[in-house]
Length: 246
Image 1: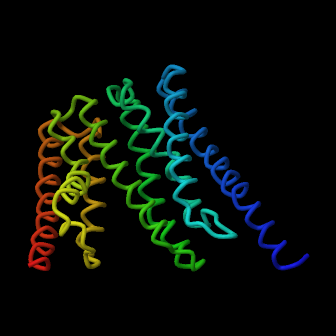
Image 2 (image 1 turned 90 degrees about the vertical axis):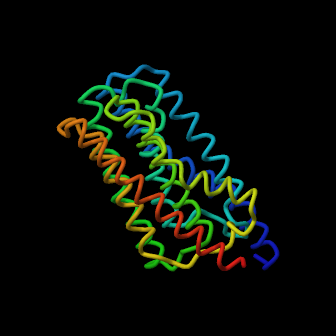
């Protein structure tokens, strides 16, 4: 086979490879959503919503995967995609009674804990396989943000904390919206351990607030403390960007 023919074949295989990888991503979603529906007695509409959410994600990923003759998700992003199946299974549960029962609350805690643990695995895979990319880092970050927003919404839906707890999942989205108005907010930020620690703290606080054995006043206190620390961290970054812009 000539070199040109080889490249044409590779280009032809690339879309099929991407579709195959995205198809495999349905497996963890089907497992997580199916188990959630059965364990928490959710209707068929829950499963359809989970599939619709995955379809939206699949289209977005298919369009965003960096082009090239061997374009694919790569091993690290495949781990992130598997984690996305867990996150979307929780996302689809927000409109339902998933968080309002003790069984549902413990199930959310279990699934979210696995998703949080997997957050450290895709980074290790990326480093060990030399497959780290800006696309992968963005995919991972956006999935983290979605998980925090979903957990905050589920805590609110559980009735354990008032609606203000949803603010715990909004700072990044507010930051992005502000960046559309003030371009200096879109400048790159230096790596800080504070942000990674803050993300972990945010998730742990939401899981604690959701825990059925946690007294309601303590759940609200934990959520409020996490919100104050998270907002403080974002304000530090905003101040740094403002000084750099000036």
